Image (cartoon, rainbow, N blue to C red; front, side, top):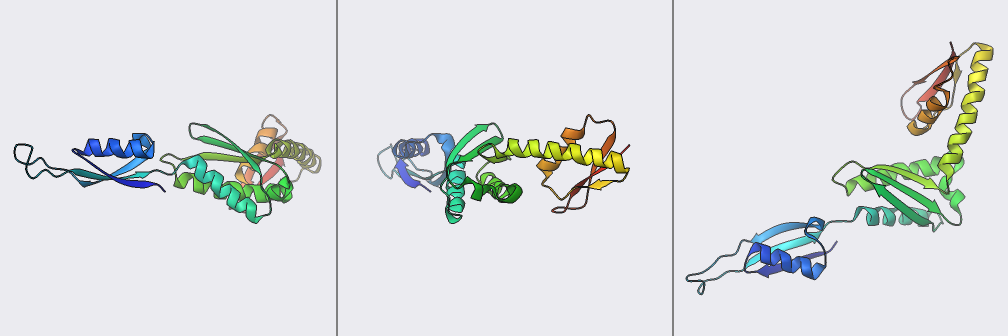
Length: 205
């Protein structure tokens, strides 16, 4: 974290001096006024310069990138990281060798990394950040897999006329199944249980 103490005739002068030296904008820093400054008699005797401590705020994207690389390095992977941010939404895509290590069985490793990375992102943000972490388009492939599973389980519920309980899934994967079956008027879907064992139940109407 960069910080600098600067002085000047006024607080504003000291601040501008610090910003120039750090090569940043005012909105990128936190300012602590150490000394207000004081003009002496006739502007000549007893002058005391203003003093400020300026600290550069952490950059959210840089902190997130650094965190992901530290975790993936521990797992034995060195992915390329692409980020796109639109307002409160931050989308991250990982690519490169050994990407399967970062996805894990049924995306469990990727889901865990997404949850941890979201905590890191919100530590460095003034507003709540919604974060999606993907790895070489795995999320879309997983969504297609879940849609196929949903259809098969819906058919099973209709055929057996018994509720079908799916395995526990993360909330965004449960939403994908609800969405896949939303237009099927033959069945109803709802979720039961508490996290991390919350799961979808499909019943015939």
